[in-house]
Image (tube, rainbow, N blue to C red; front, side, top):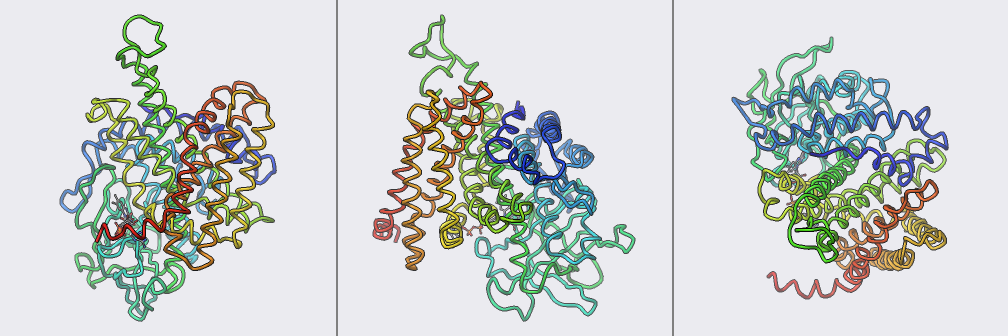
Length: 592
Ligand SMILES: Cc1cc2nc3c(=O)[nH]c(=O)nc-3n(C[C@H](O)[C@H](O)[C@H](O)COP(=O)(O)OP(=O)(O)OC[C@H]3O[C@@H](n4cnc5c(N)ncnc54)[C@H](O)[C@@H]3O)c2cc1C
């Protein structure tokens, strides 16, 4: 059973991602080590003792549509009640509406643990948190006053309605209609698919954020508006009123996250209310809805990255525990009698160390991204720098971590042998759940395009170059640390950072010369390359940070393993980025 790795998470936050420095610099108000530790321990307890034990029943039963109502798995309603009683929804939410306005770093750490417990369950609050941020950033005071406190408390939940059958990655073609009414409201008509937690029985009201198009809107993404559309209308005194004209038509049957209801939502069908059309309120300005929704999506992208870290952590724990107990054959240096535990076979050792290194790397990248988001709000003198750093790191955190989630979960099954393929060990669920994360919130392919075409060019390339220079300093610190356990780490990091620099400059040159096809052909290998280099650097940073206090042997050994094994992929990836485009274009005939 999953046990939240609270000490490891606290260490990564404080000593790798920058939480410790931010506290010391006084950028996080009264927040101190004691409060950080108390929050992490309680979040970890909740994930371990309350969420994780209900994951299996959620997977087996799933959420079901019964007489038009979505029934969540046994025990999940109470679990959700306990969740809101803990006040978890409001960790980063504004204090004016009952939140605690704590740093995002703490929230993503807590999200990791809840997602390890059950990704399907944690999705519900993840969407609500995104809705809170979008409403708080863009909605009118009246909408904020009506909806935010109940969303922050968790009494109501939020959703994100973008996708339509013909409009997934390309939202510019969405068709859901919005009509103006004289009283300032709008009526919404259309169908949205794949809406996570679009309908359920755990909260009294569901607040949908819906992208739709006005009749006179310009074509494409510049003609999309964002609307707040509640399941139940809200009376002037805050009580619930009539049912709005929307409903969940059906639930998807999915590979994983069975407990999370994925709904087809119908708006304005005339099923509820006297006049056809779901009543909605504009969020932000007409035709500027996509920008507002991006507030929610950026938040959600990092949160989805955390799902990858979370699954990788849980899958690794399970695999290590199994490999200690399962005995087969004799490992080469096995001195005991009888068969050896499989953990001692070099091939299994390699697999488990790879799982651990990738998990810790993805965690450090994601927390560092959250740190940049926090600094962009709190370090007033370097706001633009931190905004750009967060923008650069978001696609890497989302894509690298979710790919790691899938790879590590798959390796976890391999370590279990045949038992991994059998549902009762739970190893298979991790892979089934993890598989959606590289797809939603902008597929990882779309993240790679974003990274190469929009993020590398920030400040004309200065942001990424500055970042690479910082990574070089970590390699230099390893070289000058005189810590023997690092082996060839300094050289391997140097070489990998040089490869990252060369691939970056080549891509920047293609983008500047408008050679888009060449740049995009290498976008995904580049994204992985960046994630691997960051993994090596952040594992080294952790080893260096731990060394003065003693007990750093394990961290340094894992870093050395990653540097001398995993980073060898980097040069090959650079080659694909720089030299792969021509062969890709030539080989397209194969697919004709
Ligand atoms: C379980 C689940 C939950 C979901 N929850 C929500 C939700 O709550 N709200 C919501 O609005 N949506 C939700 N979605 C939808 C999800 O965000 C989309 O599935 C996703 O954005 C991809 O869109 P698509 O499925 O139409 O794939 P497509 O856009 O058709 O993409 C198919 C493939 O083509 C690639 N591709 C597409 N366009 C390009 C391009 N321009 N360049 C390069 N490659 C491209 C993609 O990377 C992908 O590999 C959910 C989906 C699932 C399965």
